[in-house]
Image (cartoon, each protein chain N blue to C red):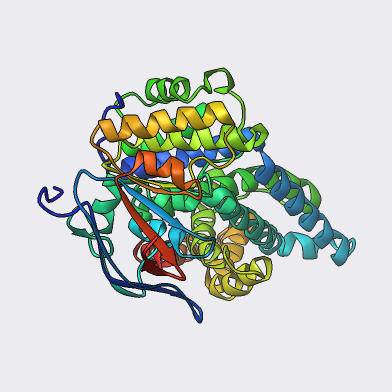
Length: 233
Length: 218
């Protein structure tokens, strides 16, 4: 065979190669993005219908509803990210390539986070229109919350999506595992988003962002360390 | 570095259990370096389990598997770099084209020119005209051809081929035989599991017949 013998690439190179592959698949099908955008939009709409015409209530809790819509949609997105790998045993193909299992984790988690960021960007104007809210403290603050929130949901979500991907009741198992775990992140996100939308006279935003940063550090670290065991054993 | 004096493959009292069923039971075997192995046996005899274990996709329940003198469990990443598996599952992404599937792997392997390498291998397996078509529309035979291109891209020292002739038309079978002969001529150790025993015997010097997970005389 004239094929030149390949040389192994490092963790970052493998992560980028796998992330590029995931984004390429997403771009070619747009299946995940379409599904989660419509699901999240429907969720936002249902909250507004359920609470009736009380705009003050909607405005006050907009941050919570926004992140609940993203959390519910994220379950679909993260489950789908591993369904692609289970078709034709592609995850085995990557493992045996060999790709560093930590690179598989980082690429999946980053891909899921990017998808959630895109979802948040689509949902924001809808939330502003539906709930009658304004971005008071600025778009930099809002972008920071969106970034940290998407990362915070995707880090544990990717681990649990991998664990549940081979289970028969995976569609039920993933939210059952994920939802209790992300309560601290969800609380921080709802509070931080409310401060961005309603103003932050007491300068509390930094504390909530700090909590989110800590949550991210813990769960990205745990996922990075545990993921090789999860997919190998 | 692979040990040059060690057998290409060595199984030391290897067993594998799925639930209550033993797929392999206390299997001991060594394949000398430079020889190729034909694995035969009925469905469920343990051929696929053994190949997956040699590929490090599975760990043994008991015993030790060595590939090129290295332990397939403790030295897994190193073994994986030298071994490639053609499996029942194609390892192909349905939504990517044939070329993209190979390019993804080539990038992951650190191939010096991923796109060119992918194109050359697609020509090698006769899929150059379907290069830009998604795998989802491929026939079983075309998937098999693409899967062998995927294996060749890795340039392995040991090629593990699980039913490589399945789903191929006569010209595909001839091409596959030529590829296996070419791999062997290039110094690659081939382990071939097939029900086509006569065909396999022309390609391999050694034979291991499995029955209920045990090695028996053919």
